[in-house]
Amino acid sequence: MKPLSDAILNSQKSAIRKLFELLIKSSDGISFGIGQPDFTSPDFVNDEIIKALKEHKTQYAPALGLPTLRRVVAQKFQNENNMKWVETENVMITNGGSQALQLCFATLSNPGDEMILSSPNFLSYIYLASYYHLKLVEVPRLENYAPDLESIRQSITPKTKFIMINSPNNPTGYVYSKKQMDKLVQIILENDLYLVSDEVYEKFLYNDHIHISPASYDEMAERTLTLNALSKTFGATGLRLGYVSANKKIIGMMEKYGQYTTAGVNHPTQYGAIEALMKGNPDMPQILQSYNKKRLFSLKRLKELQFDTIEPFGAFYIMPRLNPKWNMTSEIFSNELVKEEHVACVPGNGFGSYSNNSLRISYATSDELLEEGFNRIERFLKKKSLI
Ligand code: PLP
Image 1: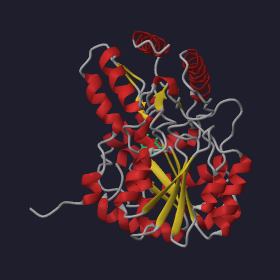
Image 2: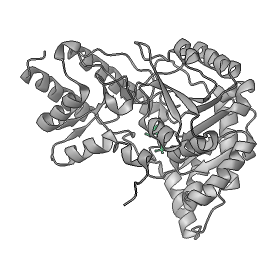
Image 3: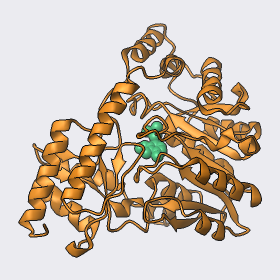
């Protein structure tokens, strides 16, 4: 038979999914691998979805999303992200942040274009680059996981089309500072590039760190594609509701692409999203307080266990490096840990070419499981005489 798509055939099955398959086999498994919060969507959101279903809102919604929801998203971008230029016509509703990302890649890319990414970074960017025949240019992060903006500048070629950023970041928890964002904006403008900004973790910030949307800079309005979703902020990963803003020409292209690929987003869910985005998540202060406690606990335990650990200030991940004395790759470490102690952490090589010696730990789990998981990691390290 003739060959199938190389790009899809050669992409790895998600490292996170593989890990779950291993963990499912044990009854006492603890997952530090999960990329979702440990809370679920609020009732005031769910009730609107149920109401819409009862009113039989089960036919196609417009390809761009419900006009009311698009208007609410535009207001959200204006008020919360200081993106004063955004109007309803600059917004499209998507099937989660994932489809928003796909639309960004689809509308920006021609085969052979280059995309620059700080590495490690969210896995989907790497495979989307390959599915859209982009050349991926990975620029390693600095020791403290800050983006290496000077190296990014030097990596730009005439073929560079866009830079992809995600702040707060999955997997490192790194948050761009104002100074770094200023510099990135300068690089984008000087080189006539586009910027894709994935802001799905914007609400998960600690220690007075703030979120800056690059599209809040007036001169970036035309060239920034900003995506977000209900998934993380509202504990709604299964609702599959995301949104993206861009200039009107790009949104028009996204509409066409959406018409022929997904033909719109779940109709009743969009009514829930209107409520969600108008009211925000009222539980966020308590959630952040509890996540901050988990973050500090994880940091303390990792240091005690002699990992090389960098304090994250955003999202709900921490990415320690294995102690070089242990002489182990993160893939071997996480495989043995899951088999021997039934604790799943995602090996760093799932996030790019520069994190083979790191693990991603999600601390979005209960305090009890977090404590027990770290106790098991301690037992594992002691058994192997590593500490
Ligand atoms: N962007 C980042 C950085 C993520 O971590 C995720 C999910 O883990 C997504 C986008 C996708 O979000 P969604 O579940 O809304 O498709």
